[in-house]
Image: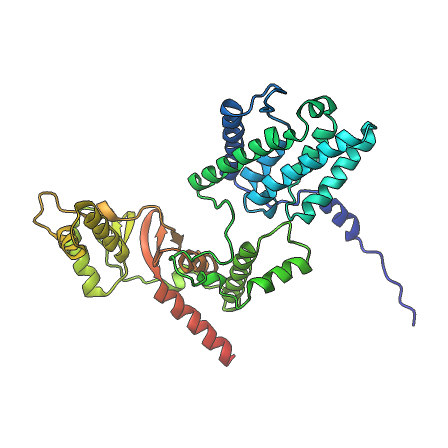
Amino acid sequence: MKISAKPRRDVPLNILKSLGPAVARVSAAEALRAGLGALIGLGLTGLFLLSPIVDLDLGLYLVAPFGASSVLLFAVPNSPLAQPWSAIVGNTVAALVGVAVCLLVTDPALRIALAVGLAITATILCRAVHPPAGAVAMTAAMSPDAIAHLGFWFALTPIGVGTVSLVLLATLYARLTGRHYPFRQFDDPSNHGTNDRNPTERLGLSEEALTGILERYRQSFNLGVEDLARLIGAAELQAATQSSGPLTAQDIMSRGLVTVAPETPLGEVADLFRRHRFTALPVVGADQSFLGVIFQMHLISQAREDALRLDRGFAAAFRRLLDGNRERPITAADVMSVAGPRATTDTPIAALLPMMSEGDTDAVPVLEYARIVGIVTRTDLIAALARSAARAGTG
């Protein structure tokens, strides 16, 4: 019996798809964050350090490859190609290669091709791959007059000085905008400042094993070990929640809420914590609109700050914090958090897990039309997952 294979109709469609965007969608806010970072980085560097006009006396001038470096440093700061070693060493090594080739080879076409090719090889061997480094080598090869004047000094200024400036500004800008640069290291302390891994990153895999995965799939240039651990952990959480069924916040949330008003004194808040053994109390307005949430840790943190500011013991500061007879008693509105994560009744567990597995969030309020209808605590989440696991074991 002869079976003839039919041509797949989706092959042309797949080819067309392969020519389309390969990068996932990003928010307009993230695009603006990256563009503003490059504007600030290059603007400050050009204003205070490197001139936009070629200066062959000191070598302190901007070159085109700095624009390409800015794309990596400000738009994709988590990329291994954007890290300080890759940027600084990569650009500097490429500049040295480009200068050497420019001084030794007279044919322009050969000089440019050789400079770029050797720069790629050298930066790979130095573990400092940085795509703009190819442009640095090409810039040197295409500028024989400048190189004849500056020589190997070109690698220091403008290349080295300019790259260091951009890296420093990218580091500061990342901190100010809530990003991590340089990227996290595998052995960094957890969010709680201990040597434990963050819960979502406890995979049972060593750094060497994760590095081996990156090398096996040739992704070392695209992803760091720490980010790979975070992605695997997030994927495991997603798979666990989907295998347990499409549970949502309304299926597991606590509905019998105990709330406080923004003007409630902290002494009463502490009494409610002690009486109900809660770890979180929602703060609501007169119309039951959600205003914020107070965690027990907020009371401890506030007392600690007062103790340091007033130079007194923690116990005395804590008693003063809860004292309702003060001239102006501290209220719930003074310590509540208004910027924490929130959910709706339709939010799946898959989205709730990462909210509470990292950081200091013990509970997530569930809102409908800006009013709180429930709250999902870590206890609620653990109980739901335990029930799902039990059902799976008996299924």
